[in-house]
Length: 200
Image (cartoon, rainbow, N blue to C red):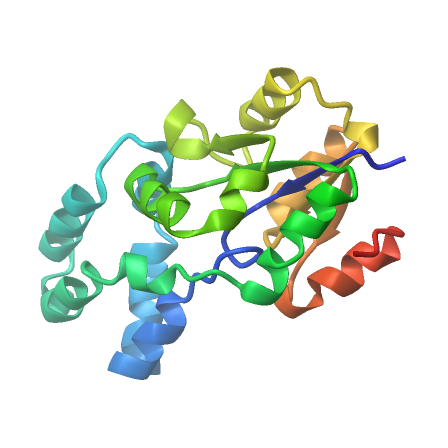
């Protein structure tokens, strides 16, 4: 029986579309390089881990990629603009809470940006616990952050449903015994929950 539901944030409850934006602004070829060398770089993961600040990251990248300096300068002011509530999904949070589920967040997230969206969106108030990567200097899919989630909130994975857009994170959750939803398409959340008998 599912008692707990654990949500990732990006592309599950919150939009995150820098690569799509870069393609619209600068064209596919430039966007491809930006995605590979910026947003999908190991350095970006370190922002989520909380070991470097985003402003420091952008300065470093502008030096590393001088031919993209203008584009990177533009994008360096845009991160918060890419973070918007996915309203059809966040609208499910209060009904899930009222239905008796314990709700948690486990997300890789820059601390400053998380603080900004936490203040902006009411749905965060309905969660029973939050694990944000930059608070603990751990990131998914590292096993340690899943262990932290389990131990901090005394979760039984067999009674817990974990939802993430990243298949690597889903696989680690499954290794711990969580039931899982790989949410490759954010518009399918309600449908995927219904497959587990969760109807709100």
